[in-house]
Image 1 (cartoon, rainbow, N blue to C red):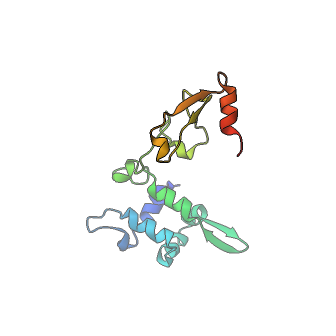
Image 2: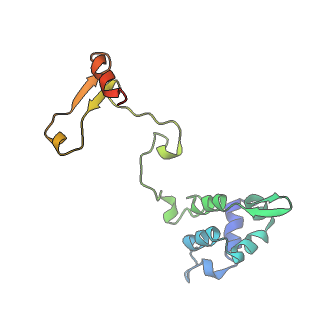
Image 3: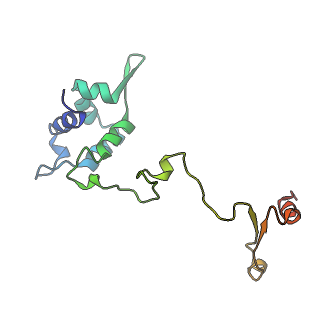
Length: 150
């Protein structure tokens, strides 16, 4: 059985609007058509049993297109390894395994003053005042005063 990427690439090759004159796949064009639920793309995907099984779900006798899953496959760097998609097109913080921290629930804020409260302000009068850190252990009365509901 062929890999999904090979089947999808061969299927998309049937529609010349998704390719340049040099034969390169226009990934953005395919992605935009998927997000717009373009009927020509949907019909093309439905014509192949592998793509139909992978990107469509039957709900009460109606086939529902998984455009998010299809978009992930199109944007995956393994789909077009010789193109720009082999590089991440997002900028952000990553963990040690290369995953963006926005996509995981395993994020810890490492802040040296976790047990402190900062007293400050944002008005014109507060600009000249010094901001003070109150430690919850060393200055509990000041922290209670700052957190007291007015």
